[in-house]
Image (cartoon, rainbow over all chains, first blue to last red; front, side, top):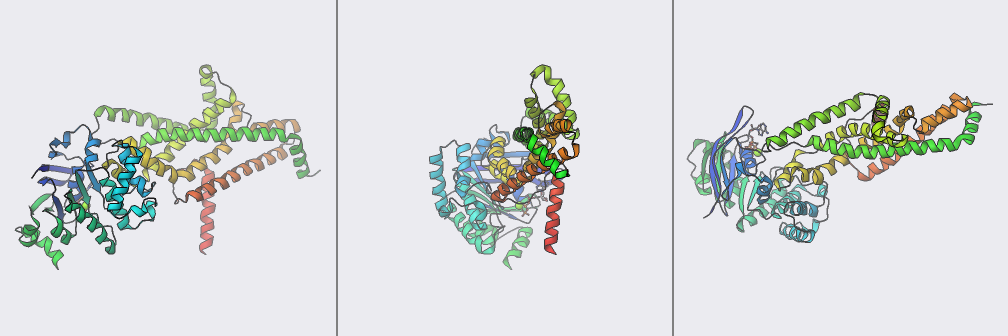
Length: 243
Length: 258
Ligand SMILES: Nc1ncnc2c1ncn2[C@@H]1O[C@H](COP(=O)(O)OP(=O)(O)OP(=O)(O)O)[C@@H](O)[C@H]1O
Ligand SMILES: [Mg+2]
């Protein structure tokens, strides 16, 4: 098993608020890692440090052998690490298709024909190809999120990061997004997912990381975490979901 | 003879002068607005860029200097009367550019408008959700690519009412350029008044002509705006005209709800 991400003793503060207090964990190739934990525990911050939307204050983040805290070409690095946001963040001034083509053309310098072919391929994969020419503002939340996933996939990322991809969705749309993510997991895409969907984490992930107050309280396989948690905090947190 | 007969006679006799004035006013106002917009996009766009924390310190230094210079430009041109700017720039730069009146007028109005546009564009940019930037950056796009492809198109659309308002302001405020002998409408009006000695009538006609121009422009801009069907915004605007327009609109809405 190839180690793709190695996070070692990462610290991050906002002004005087220490949000990450020494976080370490690894992600192997083809892993699906779910980050769980209470609100404010630092999950989003950890994820954002991974693609440099936030810069860790200290520690080490090695991705595919590259020390990203000291990388020269941030944009090239980011192109390899996709990110899917809670609020979708589709480009409002473009059609669905253009959303998926823009970065391919600007960052990877693909020509329009290749970019379009790729975009349509992944839009089809998430079931949104028939909306290729739609204005993004006319889509439902679930549709937007599937487009956002396709947009990230178009960059052929080695890793895909998700920050609560279903938290802004109406309940009836959560399933369609989780299904897409499930099929990506089955294809072996490496993913790091911040989520409150415990049953998804249980079924799909290869590793669960439970964060509390800026540290990793416990990590392990879904069986270990969900069925035999050792830490009291983990137990208390999970108890809230099992009621 | 009645007031309106006098007006009609002046109009019949002097319409070519009025017409020339209108043409010059529109030319100066329009080109000044377009060039001001271009200037504002450049100045305001760069002002709105936030460098990454990881950017080299030399880049941060340059940005800092740029911010200070652009701040001075914006404050000076928004904080002094255009008439003073016109006189100062016209005489100060005449030895260098050796210019004729019309280019000088367009230059002055462009620079003046640019200062307002820079602020309009900057707040237009700031009104765009940060998520748009984060999404673009997370795909590997640079600061500049993000600005040009994602942020500016949305910012311009949001700021369109304010941008259009600058055009209307320029139609009116270009009248101060008669001080540097630009043959726009106000200049023509003054010389007509001088030769007819019918001051009230001449300036009454002039006011009507200005009103026609601003109302027509406002109507056209509203049509364009409707086509773009964007949401309402509250962006800085450069004078009372916009405020009264908004007031009227608000009043209308107020009346409608009761
Ligand atoms: N840019 C920022 N500036 C200041 N404080 C921040 C910033 N981003 C996050 N924080 C703070 O850091 C703490 C951790 O935030 P983070 O978003 O990482 O939590 P989270 O685990 O993702 O929570 P949630 O489940 O609510 O998304 C919070 O207290 C938050 O207020
Ligand atoms: Mg979060």
